[in-house]
Image 1 (cartoon, rainbow, N blue to C red):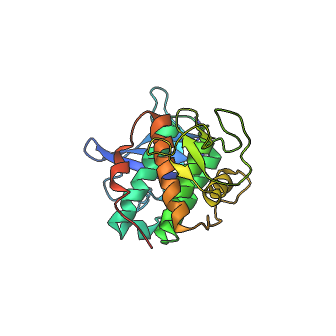
Image 2: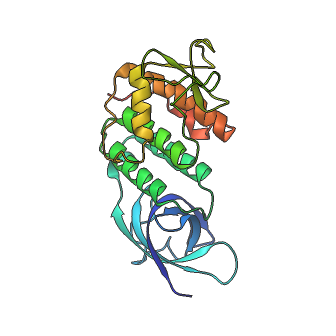
Length: 252
């Protein structure tokens, strides 16, 4: 079988046998895959310093005759995102991004847009560029790419159009906003001001470049955290394991 070349992000690795590595990676062309790197734990020019978790690599693999695992033939490091490895709090955020990517996109479900999002998000937090905003942008856009975008156009109860005035409430079961006439603001239905709704609309838009800053107030960031936490847990049916480490920490 002909070898396949693709850019990929290393999601996780674990030892396999005496000298091999089992590598999970998200590729730009083929999505989430697992492969065996033969002899990678020994000194090898084929994999030198390129299989660390969160690394962006240029990877060459070959399908095997049986089984779901591919055989990794070579791997070249493109960006190791060193800033992530120098800060434990950033490692936690990168781990969350990886877990969310794996949950939304199981094996063999390709998404170039999701690959690009993960790449830009890892680069942003590695450079400590507006970490809170980068996390929110990643969460909202990832859910949109995965088919779970939040409907911001009108109240899911009465159908009244939201015109960008006054507060809107997020209703997790419908994945949509509701108006104050139909529901009361609470922990279960967190509220958003007009600026927050506008910011969420921008970040969900596929026309917005991934490299653009979200540029919203601290209050909007706080409101978006509450909304996205509720939305993600409801849609995925669980709380991501890495999520419990995120919220007590705030970056300036």
